[in-house]
Length: 498
Ligand code: NAI
Ligand code: MG
Image (tube, rainbow, N blue to C red; front, side, top):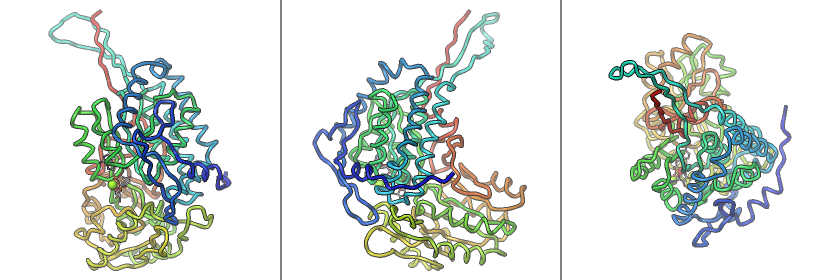
């Protein structure tokens, strides 16, 4: 059923109002009273102001989360009650769908229609799905055989306990959805949280904070401290009273998180960069795989950690695939996220615009062939042309590094034997795509690709039930699905002689 897409005026007012942080049940200013500006990336204009948290605010939020973890009411709620509150949160997200989608379009720049049919319902579904796990994350009974205690009998079992106070640092590409991916499993397991949204896109997480309280999740269980990476994220990652840190963002900062976590050896999970191969075999249905390959890279303006940014096409169909994807790229309507005609919005920030344009320049300097695109669109807002590059090699930055913009490299290949090592030639291993009508080839290739997700004859399919995460430098651990519970669970073995 189609959802009617509406710009929500309440979201504009929310964006324009000075926004505070959530600590306990209070919406507070930063301890030093500072704020920072948030921008509309389609114009570069200031949208509003948000509290600029620092280490004092982080400390206060962590102590609040600690108190909420150690004493009631969260701890005393049954798993079923916890699940019901999470389920209500999912419902509230759907009820506030227009407002949340408008906030995403304003703050991140993504098309409103995309936020309304993807980000918002996926975030709601994550809470609905995870609410069911609240009652099911249980241990097991064990049958023991202790050789040096012949004849002794035991009742032994495992308890699944929440890991404790969790710090969660999220990026700006799917602001609401990343908050949901992080909060859902942590709450299902009974943890308490200090969430730090990205400085580029703090608004939807703050709105989510209101809904969290409205859903009946007790004060102090989720605290939201807004601010910058070094000022706000770093003290959270280093804090001694934080038991676990979960991070999504750049591999560079992921490595800093690991270092920061070493102080108290807090647990760490990381969802980092990617340079995902997307492979079209000659026997694929090109009517599906050409738009599929375009969607794999251009969805969310290429600002996806799993973007299909290295396209491989079998030699005999290479020209057709390049022409088809280029044609698709040319026809994408680039514009403001609030314009209903828009298919691709601006990049999120002036830094990302410079970064992506820097990659385009380096490709040119290295001798890559620009098939289509290759530059900025207009001179206001942070728009970049959907771009297809050919003639690249793994030594070029455009083929080796994560660009995080609407830029795909495309290369021919002769055989599967040649393809697999090339596709795996990356420090990353987040996702991959395989397009073929040969069922054996599809699954054989899926088995050989070093990636946490392999999509066959589709791309960018996400579901709360399906684990997501990376091999190699793409990260540690898996989000979503049953696997996500492991990130927030301590297992206790209890052994009683009977
Ligand atoms: P980033 O990794 O700096 O930012 C992600 C989050 O980490 C933000 O909330 C930020 O405030 C926080 N952060 C930054 N420095 C920190 C520190 N020292 N300690 C703790 N938290 C810190 O990413 P950025 O600078 O926004 O983007 C740069 C590149 O990173 C992008 O071009 C892209 O390649 C990659 N990236 C990957 C993402 C993914 O989903 N895997 C998401 C965002 C960016
Ligand atoms: Mg950064």
